[in-house]
Image (tube, rainbow, N blue to C red; front, side):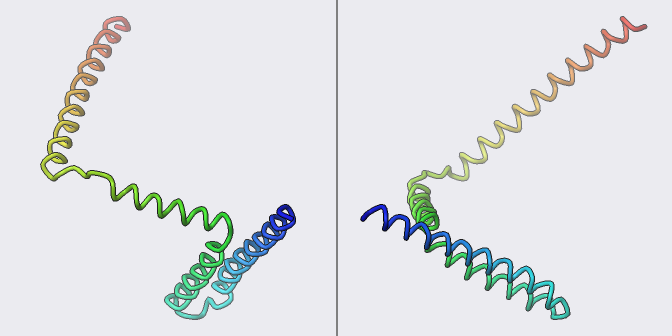
Length: 122
């Protein structure tokens, strides 16, 4: 009984994905077909078709799983303790200082190796 329900659900999911692809294909073909219309109308049509396709895709098993993942991600983002302005500035200055020091060291090493190579080559 359960396997039969899963195969029906899987087939219905496949149909939904076909509908999503058809909607998106219709939006693309329609954009070319109505090329004489102003761009804003074509863009609005594509956005509307994409929204409908996303709504249909959200009703599939994969879409429901993605929506759950998005909700969990938002919950986790709320738990993050973001750095203060002062912490951000201090960290940025440390990174800039480290980059400058490394740049100077690499420049010095490059100059030294270039000098040694010019002595060898003559």
